[in-house]
Image 1 (cartoon, rainbow, N blue to C red):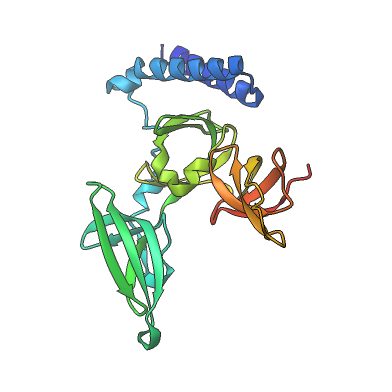
Image 2: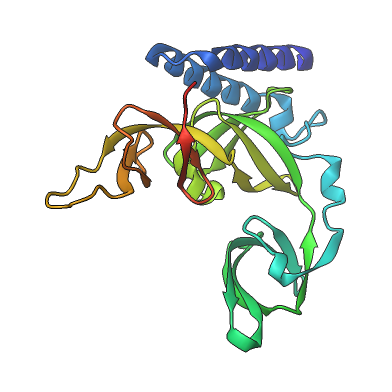
Length: 258
């Protein structure tokens, strides 16, 4: 029975993954149906029931046993997505803002979230302060689709499927698309943060109309993209053009001439 469940699960996962290049409404519906079926099958196996054949949780690995071994780093080096240990608690860095205090030197204002309780904490570190940074595991996944506040991902080699909240992608969640390669940062088998490629291609849906009375055209104008976000683009761009976007700062990079 164990082998049968395993075969069905992998077969369904592969069928789902084979639809990954199809973009028609029917293919999208089929992909989501297969995903739901696969999740239902997994929940009905002896692994999910907690019996003697219980399977290792999807994102668990021996790596988690090593993740508590941290290293001291200067607090100025902290970035969003990093995991640190402080006063016996483990925190994920939600936001990090560098500040310059004149002759007083640099400092960093960080917003932390407790990994276990979800509580937030705001702290300021000086340029000479150190913190214990915890190592996290990074794994590659492919986005199947996003619905509501959840992103549905698949591991392309093992066909393991996971659901993660969209907010772990931060502001980059707006750029998430089907078939996009993403990276999950895992701690003790839990997805703490996620990232998308630095450069992605979007389509310009609408651009700002030129303002009357101007003697010269502005260098930039607002543009609405196919994902619903608005950015500044060069004034020569028109609706329908494909452009490359820097997802880290929402800036225009170049035209996509492919």
